Length: 109
Image 1: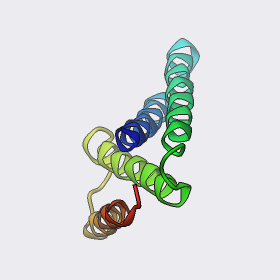
Image 2 (image 1 turned 45 degrees about the vertical axis):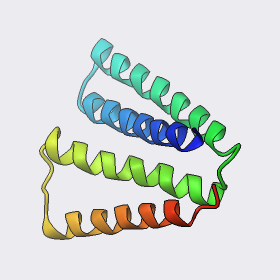
Image 3 (image 1 turned 90 degrees about the horizontal axis):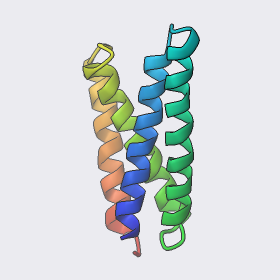
Image 4 (image 1 turned 90 degrees about the vertical axis):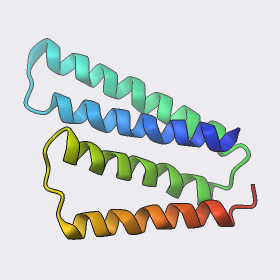
């Protein structure tokens, strides 16, 4: 169950990155609406990470959490914000995913 909570926390991290991307260049009420979403996802992500670390080692949970956020943010950047999908960018995000899987496989929980 704690792994599921950790994965949801990682998706919330992607959510706050998405809100930051959408707020970029906006002014007025639309800016504050996206920033409100950022705050909600940020708090939810941190609370869920804290809950997951009740049973998972922080040395595993934190890198997995940030890895999910990094992977999701890169994919959002490519597919939603039309950022470049270069070979090296995809290569290094792939090595990150392999590292996350390795941490999960070696985790005592």
